[in-house]
Image 1 (cartoon, rainbow, N blue to C red):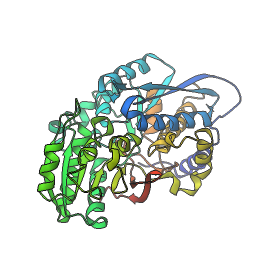
Image 2 (image 1 turned 180 degrees about the vertical axis):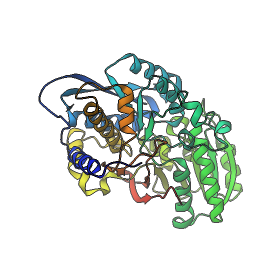
Image 3 (image 1 turned 90 degrees about the vertical axis):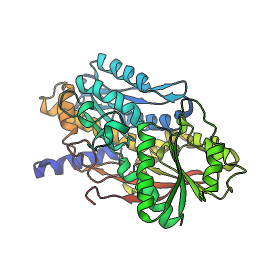
Image 4 (image 1 turned 180 degrees about the horizontal axis):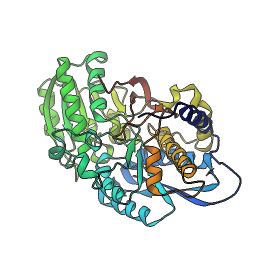
Length: 418
């Protein structure tokens, strides 16, 4: 994407101020209200991931307060049903957002399976979506396996032929391999059992882990998908994995799809010091609860964004957030990525207002400005979005379960061209 050099410099200067807690208000007059929504799983098993993410987005809106003379309001939606993220509920939420003309964009959803249901609905409105945590590659990239395994393609998700969907997270073509590299190179594992929850996210990340682990010279055993519409009994599979020589397990799942139940059920089958690995879907408090007495420091999870705590320029904003949210459970891997998503959305709304002569912009004008996002100085990274809606320089992290909970031990910058 080519933009005027002067515009980029001015935009970056403005965004640095916003990331440090400044307002994007262009004047004291109140021109009306603009709403920013979120769609995240904030109840049940998913709440330990969804609520901290919602809090991050809400905090960004609160810190901004207004944009170019318009008052900002945050409106959260919960896409969980019976404690688990639900695509149908997510779609209903998006339809409610569309019916409110003040909502100019949404942060979310959290889960890729929900995104696959929501994007076509929002695309026809149109309504901007920007997710802190969706990682399924088929949401933005055409692969020949997407229709078969995910149930959709990039074009089928965008019936208008235009893009309205963006994200800041690294997709699963990076997340699965990153954990495979870590397992083989750092942990020294040579044989790993792999299972998935048969959802687009879980299946995709498990396949990418297995492919990279085997490419490194490792062996994948007991590769199996499980129906997680109800809690499975993993004991037979765990015994088979142990007999096949597995030194650890990779779970392509989320806590809501019982991602860490096998860890608890492995007691008496696997040594407590065996390894349990997974994607961001298990990197939450619910996973540790579900692991029971087998929850220990031999558990690792990848996360699709970098650790904001490693960014010195983010320190003051993080401190303000934690002063307002002192409970450690209110901060999770995607809290500050959600802050960045809301901040990008607010900045884009501001530029859309300018382009519309200071007036309330249309939803399409907001989408057009998000697509032009370049060198945005966020808390979790510097973001330029490509034509597909992906970050051009994604990053991720590896976390380990320590006494204080999930703790970042490694940030990884990835090169999409490699």
